[in-house]
Image (cartoon, rainbow, N blue to C red; front, side, top):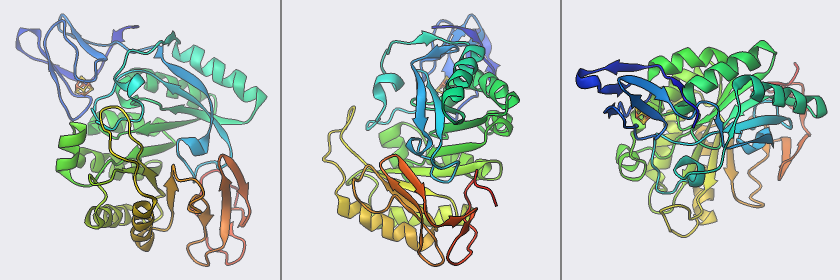
Length: 336
Ligand code: SF4
């Protein structure tokens, strides 16, 4: 692993460190690392061990993040590292979040250079920090985002939103869009299945919504977070933040430490109906042929953006307006 001095911590007695990057606030003894495995107390100094550690990179459709209302149909250079500050038993990326994957050493300058080379071959909107948890890659993301922004590219975070307010506010001016994973809408769910908490994630969503484009993802797991009451409460809260916030309801498949059967499609349809009564843009993910991956005008129901896999066609838009009824559609990256 590549090392660099980290920020956001208090030095305690006996060279113990309290890390203040995420709400876990680990107290770390000298020679030990925090729960995320990537922030280490080295003789009273906090070190980020995954600085320059890149486990995967490459071009992805922006819809894969998923972002449906941010430069639709474009590609984004995607970078990921190791480590995570939550421990979700259903983790869909556990080999890099909690495993010991192969990696390459890539400086922020080198990452931006590769992205620029790729973008000369095909249109690329910028960089997505994704695959594992980018908030525990804080210093690398901050530096890379500054370089990318300086060259006119966008920065996207795909995150669990489990970060303290001070580091979040420092990072936000460099971030153009976020997809934040709201894993459930009950504190006990977060405590039991993710070893985290819901309230800080809600705070991150509310803070980010005032600063950049935000879309949300909710993985629906049968029997754990799929009750009508929980989905209603989630949708009501999102509506109170902004009813235009796109919500991606995603189908669970067994992974990592949880071996439940995949979420029934009927459950996802029920969740879609509840959310759609409250929110303007709701999508189903990981459900082939659901018909709920298109963007539809909330006013006249005309199809606006058609998605077939990662094939994206703008079919009912006149700039940022519905071509039939003139309703303004909140999509970043379209003219007008
Ligand atoms: S970022 Fe890592 S070390 Fe810091 S509080 Fe969170 S889990 Fe602990």
